[in-house]
Amino acid sequence: MPGISEPYPWQQDQWKRLNRLIRHQRLPHALVLCGPRHLGKAQFGYALAQRLLCENQQAEVACGICKQCTLFASQNHPDVLLIQPEEEGNAIRIDSIRQLSEFTEKTAQQGGWKVVIISPADAMNINAANALLKTLEEPASKTLLILVCHQLSRLSATVKSRCQKVVFPVPVLAEVDSWLSSQMGDSRSTVAELLQYAEGRPLLALELLQTDLLEKRRAFDSMLDELAIGQLSAIVAAQKCQYLDGLMAIDWLYGRLALQLKTKNMHPGAYRYLDRLLQIKRRLHGGANPNKSLLWEELMLDWQHLFLLAPFGRAG
Image (cartoon, rainbow, N blue to C red; front, side):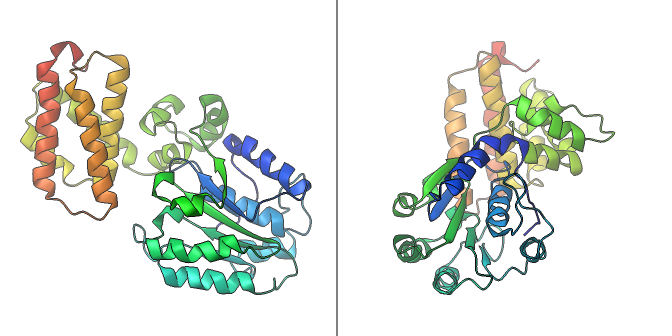
């Protein structure tokens, strides 16, 4: 749990809203922070938790130096509980929620707030979500549950109905430009390029910048261009895709085609292709393990076919 004491620049509206609720002692007992991945929702949750626990708040953010902030930053605060999957991609199970229930029933050791952060809450399985309902229906005093949610549709309707939603949309360029520029150092990339590849999500843009993902994404787009004009065979393209993270590459393919549809005339089959990509994503999220070779051969053949059917829609 990082020692973050302030929200990101593109989260100021949500931060001000919650601070108004805190000032008027109207903060609900449970919040669901919802929106796409890579927007900093978990960091926002940590900043809010630290702000509530801090003994010496400055301009409605945590001071970062008091005893409570020091405990928080060291991940040793006894009144903070982080619930997350044991491994990324796994479910949050009922045992973790039982631990949460025991935690919320106890008196705060530091005499202030108790905060639980569930991240991502949409990873809870059915039994865990049902077990959480008792805590949501019988909230303890000065106890806040923060549910970080990437896919709101996957969160139980009964859980959602007992939480107040805080929505995080993809920010506009003006909210991100200065922050992302300050992270770029001597990079030859531009903010516009990074945000285009990251579909506007600033933390994904930063990840692209700090890893080899940007070069991989550029190579992926070049491969799709070559495929569309017949300079590369679908079989060779499929072989290259097998070595990429499946969900990530499906996201890239979806984003590229969505952009094509905004800027070019495409064959109507492009919309069916997008639907198919969404279905594949759902299966992969659900733990499916398809034959990678066959899956990518079909996707690459169909991609090439889209452009052969509609030469006026070719990349160029």
